[in-house]
Length: 201
Image (tube, rainbow, N blue to C red; front, top):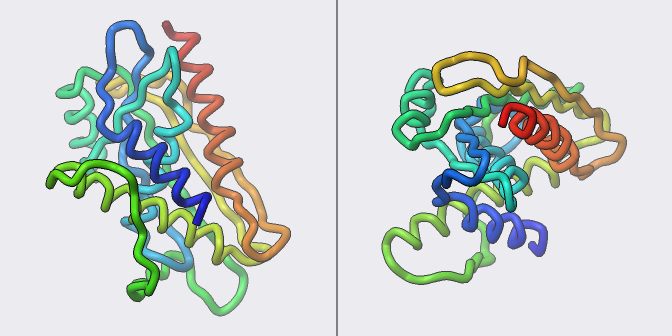
């Protein structure tokens, strides 16, 4: 619960940010996600916002894109005056009876999740999306089994499609049940993206 709440707060902080002229900005496209358990679409939004939480700081600004098609994501980035676009995909593989890409809808839980903030329709929608994304990411981590493999592929392009950081892949295999592999994978990828952004300034 504490981990998820921290993710929600970070996601709410960066979700509506727009780049300024003094910061290196990156638009983060909705990732492609294949997971063994949980809702892939919601997990994709959570992964996008997890990237955003890492790629935000004194000299970095991230903007979460909503478009799901790559072509539309590039157009959305141009509309939002973002020169760089991060494209990523996550694949989880499990040895055993579960199939790659199986999407299992989660039943409503008894606990009610609360996120600090105002009560306007817009802020309520943002809180709801942040909670759903954070919960999906938490579910992926908590349901990870020993020997599960995660592969994170990513690249950084300009809004007109020119490469800044060529395609890279990070892979990890779980050693124990419930091991969180997403955090170190996203952190390592974010470090590479931030370095590429800084080098291109």
